[in-house]
Image (tube, rainbow, N blue to C red; front, top):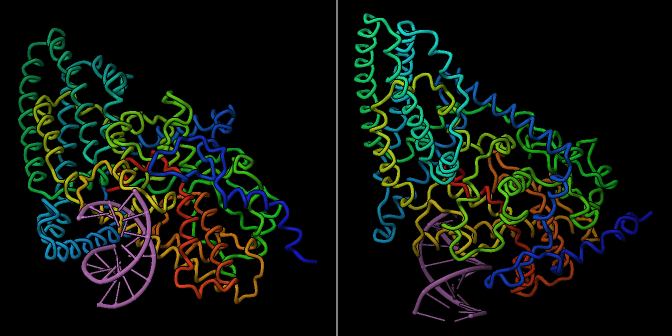
Length: 586
DNA sequence: GAAGGTCCTG
DNA sequence: CAGGACCTTC
């Protein structure tokens, strides 16, 4: 029996659908992306899931749970050292980048504008991190102590009103707070301090009302304690702040990370009912030894590119050939988690069901679309993301909810708030050029777009101040990404040919294929992002195109790749808004 | 001529 | 990944 004949017929439609941009995509393409219709209407997929009340409810409960857990974690977390592996990776990346920066600076000293201080900073950073943590830890302890005293002196009545109080920074302001957090590495401070100021005002009220209920001795004690506390706190805050001021950028972010305590693993995230599993008969059969393709299952708990065993074939030919089950709409369940997240956000945010996909690079979306995209509080959607993905959204939680217990006592912090905010705006985070975080984010974006326009880039790197140099550097990045991508494709296409594959449609890139692992290793080292299915589809298509070209002998033509490039350049998908968040750049 | 691509090299 | 040469497009 010829497997080809069996497997191919159903997919011809989708493949042609792939090759020629279809008309169903209604996202209005902007002028510069003429012809960039996405053949995969990802933006339409999740609505079906949203429509499913079961799924929605389940998500909601999960999210609540995750949030509570986060809060609890934040509360009992002792500021421990970050996961060594991550730290090391980050550090080495950092060093590499720094060395490169230095090199770059030598060659074009004028272009980069204000740049990082210098290499000395890495060491200092590492030394100071623990110091700051220690200080803050001590501070926290002191606060607990003092507060205990005060509470003793005062009445239990106060305790009842205290932390348990339900207000958690809701109301109109909270949107702004989260927004800050979403779009700026400093946001955690914004959130923090805004939270505290809120509580401060509450504290002030308490202050006014309290003494009336206290015996005079207790009042005196209270006053003394207050003064002591205020002094100590403002001193400590001052010193911490000073350290930070002297510190290189990134410190706060680092601090943030250490506070948030590097949530160990994604929670067992609920996949949508039936989600994440290729339902296609062939697809299931395709999997070696029942290894389910974790398509659509959030990566939180699954090592994506490390299947127990890898097939001998680079691109599991034959077996997989039939993963095109039909138009994407027919298999909504393979929708990537972040896409869900995004949809959910859009849904929650109201304006337009699919309105938040960056349907093409808007002229100035960097300023325009933020408020709605990241700004929204992600009460539960956030729980769908991995820690690393989330780093930012989780930042504020430990602070705002870590208890307000210490907050009512901090009038002086209020003073610092403005300073810190100014600081956050002044510090080079947004003007420093590109850092390893940006690179990483760019790589993730590559999963969605191979040929981003500079406008798109600007929109998705709001924390980068673009100039000609930065722009071309980033464009160069994508050029390099493509280069690697196409090289891999060609390599595996040739290998498939030499392996005797005759039908290009047999070539489908699945998550357990070697090719996928190579790509994932390159663009998603660390596996902290779930490679979207759309990328797999594009990769499969690219592979097939290379296969066709090579097997047709077109590679004798020096520019034989160009038609392929052209095809691929039309297949960019929309990038989830979530990637706009600068949390990816940290 | 600027912008953006590819190819090649290190 | 960056730099540079070279090409194409607008």
